[in-house]
Length: 350
Image (cartoon, rainbow, N blue to C red; front, side):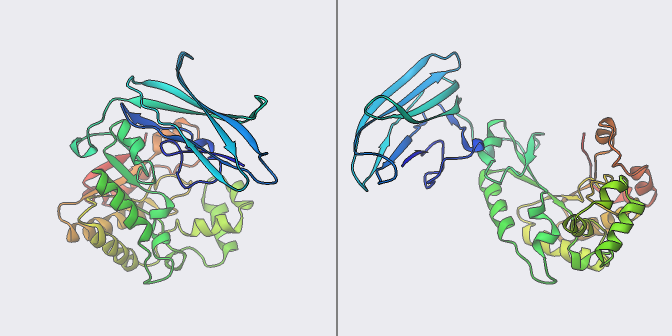
């Protein structure tokens, strides 16, 4: 068996070939890159004998700038690890190629890994918090990537951070994933924008029966054809987009969330794109205004210096795309319902 590994490019504990998303890397000048090859002779794979392992690096113009060859003898049931240390001074795009040859010169395995050498970066902690640059879920193993372009902000908004993922059953909270993500972001010096959204099925105002949910969607949401064919899982997820059946439940959850992270998170966005029937929010603009007010008052009671981001609209973006998912006059109706007094920052996706 032959495994390609790299202390710089690939997980060091991986015994499998990586997927395509893992075949990249950004490294500062003079960083030590340590690609490696593992050889294991078994009855089903390698034959006894000598093998040539070649490491080479070419630049964006195809010029070979590094080449090193190792001759290794395969011994039954003995693993041989062959490493090469590469250190480049010049910034640019490069390709690392690793190839294994048998004694006849036949290529048994080879692969190419693109990477880049960049300037030495200042710590992200030195970047001002007024930086406008940020990204989605940079804490999900992508913090180093965001740092390359100066991302200071990390928006927590995926399902892993939503209410249904945290409190699947009443009163039982799972903070494990969020604790880890918050620590990673804080350690990196990144600011967090946390989007509070979703409602657990037990707290949802949606009908209990999934067929009743389907009928509601066909009658009230755009693109009824989609809901006629929707799976039970899609309908269960739709239930999590309804407003909570009790404002007290919404207030209690936000209180728990903000109290836990008030030292680390100071920007809270209330519901992702509530004007979009993706759906993210299956409620009226007036219901959104009420939820925004409760969130605003609860957050500021716990952390007076916190900033509440309101609306998180996608209106013009989706209209431009010709989508049929938009709730008409959402902003106007929510403002008429009093929402204008209950946010510090207007959030708009475009």
